[in-house]
Each structure stands twice: as C-alpha cells, then as structure tokens.
Image 1 (cartoon, rainbow over the protein chains, first blue to last red):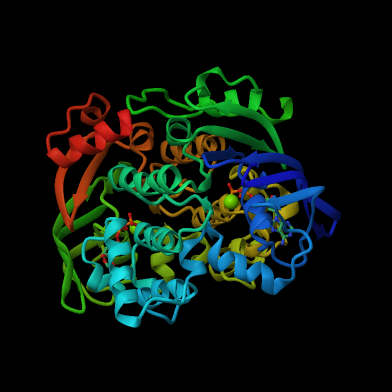
Image 2 (tube, rainbow over the protein chains, first blue to last red):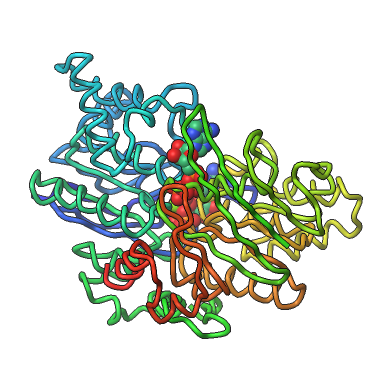
Length: 273
Length: 244
Ligand SMILES: Nc1ncnc2c1ncn2[C@@H]1O[C@H](COP(=O)(O)OP(=O)(O)OP(=O)(O)O)[C@@H](O)[C@H]1O
Ligand SMILES: Nc1ncnc2c1ncn2[C@@H]1O[C@H](COP(=O)(O)OP(=O)(O)OP(=O)(O)O)[C@@H](O)[C@H]1O
Ligand SMILES: [Mg+2]
Ligand SMILES: [Mg+2]
C-alpha cells in the first residue's frame, strides 16, 4: 500500500475574474521514496503541498476524489484531527522559512516545542536533542544559534532550522518546499544526506519541491513536472536529459552551466506551449 | 563604485565578519559566494545602510562615505537592494501596484502607470496580478515583485541577495537576461550574492568566496569557468557544484 495517494486534487481561489483553479486535477501516489516536484513559478507546487497538509489558506478551496494517507481518508478530518496529524505523522517545511517561525521565540525553544508533542521527553533531554538536531544540519555553534531569534539567523540557517524541526518529529510523510535554496552546495549535500537517511532507514516518504533541476534529477527517485496546475510529465531518476514535454525541455535548455559563455540564455516561448 | 575596506561586524560580542575588503568598479558585476552563515547578507546590509554598527570603510555610488551617510532619499536613487527574503521585505497590506508606485511617488516621477505596467512585463508578471497582495502570490512571483521594485528608480548600483533562488530556471533565465541587458544599456554596477555558481559564470566578471566571515579568495570568473579556483574551499564548491 502506498503512503499517500492523491486523485484529482483541485485547489481553487476566488479572484476578480471569477474562481481560478491553481491546482487542476492532480493525481499521484507516494511510497517510501523521494519524489521531486519541479515546475513553473506559480504552477501550484506549494499549494499541492499545502493541500496535502491541510494548510491551504482561506478563501482557497480544496477538493479531491481521493486523498488517502496511511489508509486514512484526509478529506473528512476536522481541523483538530488535521493539526494532530501535522504534529506527528506529517510535516512540511514551508517555502518562506523565517515567515513560518514565531518571530518572538528563540530558535532553540521552538525546536523544543516541536518535540513536546511526543510528550515523553524531559526538559533537559529536549534541550539536548534540539542542540543535536542543529548540529546535524551543520549549524556550527548550536548553543549560540539556539539563543537567537528568527530575524537574527541567516537565510540558509533559517532553512536548516526548519529542516531540524521537521526531522526531530520523524514524521512518516515529509514535504519540503525549497528547503535548500539558500544553502551552499557543500552544506546542501550534507542536509540532503540526513533526509535520505530518514527515507531509507526509517522508511519515510519525502516530497521535495525545488527549482534546482540538477539536484532533483540526481537525488530523487522520480520527478513530477508541473505546468499551470497540472502534471505534464513524470521523469525517472537520472533521465532528465530524455524529457519529452516541451516545457521540461525548455527548462533544461535555460539552465546556465558553470563554464557558461553564452551572451543570453534561451527562454521559453510560452505562447507555443 | 563600491569600496569595502576592512569591514568587521559583531553581534553581541560574536564577530561574524573579519576585515573584509573588496572593490567593484563602475559597470562591473561582482559576486559574493560562500558558506551559508558566512556573512554575505550582512555585507549587503552594511552597504545598504541597514546595519547600526560596524568598523571599516564603506563607499558606494559617487564618492560617498557611509560614515557620512546620504539621506535615505538620496541613497534610494544611488542604490537599491533586493533582499534574500522577499516575503519579509514586502509590506503585507500593500498591493503590488502600491509597492511599485511608491518609489516613483516619493521622487515625484511622471508616467507612473505606464512605468508600473512596463516593469510587470519586464519581470514576467501577468498584469492581472497588479492589485494583488503579497500573500496572494507564489514564492517566485513575490521575488519578481522585489526585483521590479528595485529596478523602478533605475539606480546605478544594485545589491542583489539571491535574486533568482525562488524562480524556476526558465523565469530565472529571463531575469538574468534582463539584468544583463540593463547593465549593458545603463552601465549598472551589480553586487550579487548567490549559491549558484553557474549564475556567477553567466552574469559576473569577478567573485569573492567567503568562509566563516572571511574572504578566502577573490578571482576572475574565468578561473571559475575553468575550475582554476585556488583556495581549497573554492575548489570544494566547484567540485560539489559540478559533480553533486
Ligand atoms: N490567495 C490567493 N488568491 C488567488 N491566487 C492565489 C492565492 N494564493 C496563491 N495564488 C496563486 O496560486 C498559484 C499557485 O501558487 P503556488 O504558491 O502553489 O505556486 P508555486 O508552484 O509554488 O510557485 P513558486 O515556484 O513561485 O513558489 C499562483 O499563480 C498564485 O498566484
Ligand atoms: N541581528 C543579528 N543578531 C545576531 N546575529 C546575527 C544577526 N544578523 C546576522 N547574524 C549572524 O551573522 C552571521 C552571518 O549572517 P548572514 O545573514 O550575513 O549570512 P549569509 O552569508 O547571508 O548566509 P546565508 O547564505 O545562509 O543567507 C550568522 O551567524 C548570523 O546568525
Ligand atoms: Mg512555491
Ligand atoms: Mg544570506
């Protein structure tokens, strides 16, 4: 049985021009694997993650023919049941990490609070675990950083704090929305290793939303490509260069390379897609 | 156009930048790359006049000294910054239209309507988004609003902190091409922070590599393209970037 199964997922917002579907009939399943989602800016990647988590902001509306997680139908759950699931079984790193942290609570305390849902740990133990989690995501001076407020950490440190908070929960389903966009390639590799370990050793499922095509192509088991609210193509790991859909091919073409000498980068002719 | 000499910054007794020095000539595009938490954004904030305390000398624009700062108004015409965190830098209750109009209003510039529309087109934002609020946009759409705002006043110096990290690579290509054209047409000066070395190869002439609050190497982009960086940290970044 798959961990997550999604059928005909739709997310709709009212706008001045009538209701707009920002996710349009998405279907996929997730096993105990690393699934990448790439796609156009504004194509509905974050809304898809939020819909699975029950975090689509009002006045957005979510519908689906099926939304099953671990044998449980997510559609009929109350707000409280949803919140309980988010604390324990599923967790998401949002795209704007600092925005999702509480601005007036110190970093260390926020990680400890995230752990409190598991209940059993004493205060001292939670503190130790929080410092360990910060060390695991390659924060060099965890004692200092634990005492900082969110606006006092760098962009990449904020992302790593969010990953630490997700990882301490060891949820069955992790959704990470651009979790490494502010990390240097060296720290990024180490953070991805932690997530890979959770997937292979603990059998978790991971959805990784990212614009970093090369990273996703190397690191994920398979990739969904989204364009205008729909999945236009699924690609097997390592097969990015064989992509068929014109949007995906356009993406690959517009990637700069490290020995780049072109005067202009090719861009998509959106009118032709 | 940008002069940084022996810049040091501490936060409550913890030193995060140690004697950082570099110069960027008029019309040059210079990259800061390096470790997460090494102090890149702090350098940009110091240059943008947003750090209350530092030591060292900073000059930006036409022979101005940050010890003897411009008025906020004059500074805005000399230098604009795109912040790493576009959500935090956009006012939550101002529409995109308000945000893009504001700098024009403050400086009493004409043709505001057409300028706003032209800028939306330039950064690839549909015109129908004009009256939306930041939370009604996706991450990459917000990032484009922040870039558009910085470009409204045509400042000669742009400080760009990860300007394309939330954009898919096709939109990134459009923005990078736009920045390159603007630089060629108007001889703009860029100081760009990025983790993406290929972006440096495309847009920049030189780069400085930071590690733990220090510049460990300053190089021409040619050295990056050909894998000839001399510091061991620079080599590590190159290897990781190419081979994962
Ligand atoms: N409150 C809202 N009202 C109307 N439209 C909205 C609202 N919030 C988001 N949208 C639209 O929904 C679409 C999908 O947004 P989403 O955040 O899922 O995009 P994304 O694929 O994550 O993009 P990015 O890569 O830029 O983060 C976007 O076009 C956005 O403008
Ligand atoms: N207001 C502050 N109070 C305390 N420490 C701060 C403050 N602002 C920044 N720092 C610290 O300064 C260091 C450098 O931060 P900075 O944001 O400049 O890093 P960065 O190189 O931009 O990293 P990233 O690539 O992750 O964005 C970090 O250790 C950060 O915690
Ligand atoms: Mg998004
Ligand atoms: Mg930064």
